[in-house]
Length: 123
Ligand SMILES: [Ca+2]
Ligand SMILES: [Ca+2]
Image (cartoon, rainbow, N blue to C red; front, side):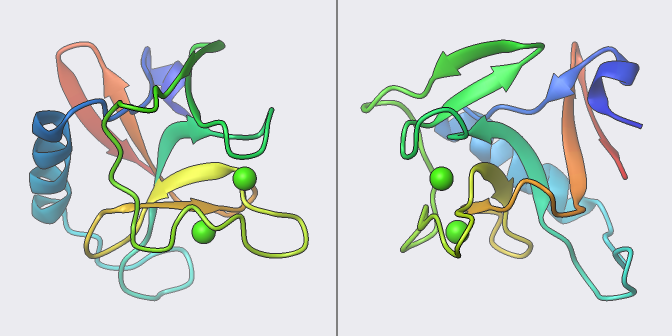
């Protein structure tokens, strides 16, 4: 199951209002357990810097849109840190504070889909 199958795409967050709405939404959804039986899970967004390290963009429906230097961002302190040997090139909301972190693209996470007129979570 992915967002495209639902007629949407991975979610983008472009403003404080949108960020607040997403955080409120996620706080109301109960993430009782993730795939490993642990509480909580990070949630994928549509952001990536896979093409050029450090140049973040939103990728929705195959279209890339750079996040401008003066655009809205909500990174955790110290992120993005491109950690590890292979680096980190995909954006996720960190479980709990729902701030942005760059993580490895292969991780299994919940996804936040953006579908016209609605938000939906799917695993
Ligand atoms: Ca990176
Ligand atoms: Ca990181």
